[in-house]
Image 1 (cartoon, rainbow, N blue to C red):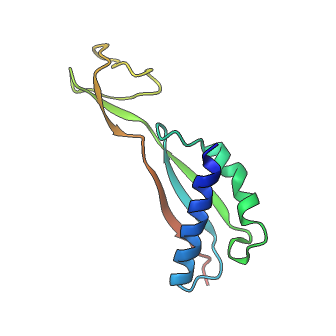
Image 2 (image 1 turned 45 degrees about the vertical axis):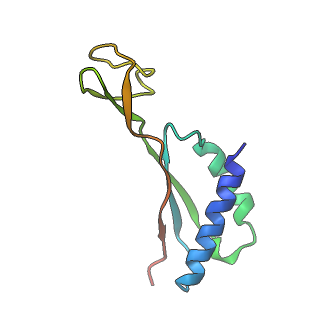
Length: 116
């Protein structure tokens, strides 16, 4: 399960960013995870409490995971479609030849801080 190492790196980056910006508390950490990225969001959620436990920066901090759909463009007819929903096949012309448009992303989208 590579999600553990992924979350450890997320925590490292968030710690570093918080330090650089003099942040002492966070309301939420927002991640964007592509549907085709091979990262399983539920595992990220499961590791979050373990990795943030006892760290004051993360007290009451929520992990928000936004899923980016796996969208492709058919090379034959140009139709854009959801790869997962259509099992990779173009719903218009039934071609399997495609270019991925979105869905492989993994990013820390934003850190939300409590309002003062």
